[in-house]
Length: 271
Image (tube, rainbow, N blue to C red):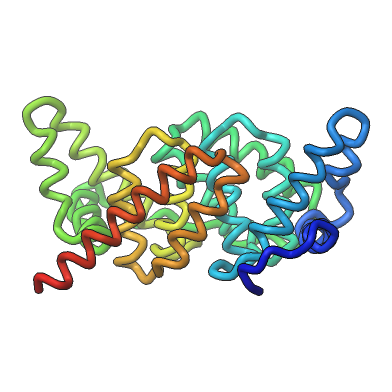
């Protein structure tokens, strides 16, 4: 794969090839929109699938999980979410991975978004019968361990920021700071089914798509890099979302990534 700009017929053909892999026998946008907005259908195939999905830097399963994460967080595109959950299954993602990515949205988009996403996943799984994955087991049962567990995970993601998070809220909402550490990082981030790098990749997708969480996006770009992600993967996740959250969201995400990369370079040079 390359960054060359193919001719329009090639982009359309390449897009249809990718769409066939993802969508299987499902109707393509070309068919569904041919009677009212054929150019919209063509743009979707050429740009989303011919251009973006053919870029290097992410695997097809990663792109599908990123898409599912973003659509679950947005909460306003159930038909597309269902299509891409099915697409994730078609390219080799497991039910367990999909469920964990959708559940992860409860942290960044709230319980309603996660519940609606899980309902969409249930419907897709019913339409695509197959061997069920082993359900992920919640990590840790002792409430006394949640804070310590959360602080350890937050340190792995973002250095030693856990206590800083709690301290920054101690004068106005100390319980919110504790919930962030205990619930987000002590409970949700401890779940099995996807690794920490994948959780951070999903978090970048969600925060970029929502467009309202710039500081948190920067924290989790750092976190993604701290847990094994690369700069290329970071920019690919954000670029991919131009198709699903719009160009402004992608541009703002790339600006955040640029700032994070510069800060890390400065810290490295100063060391």
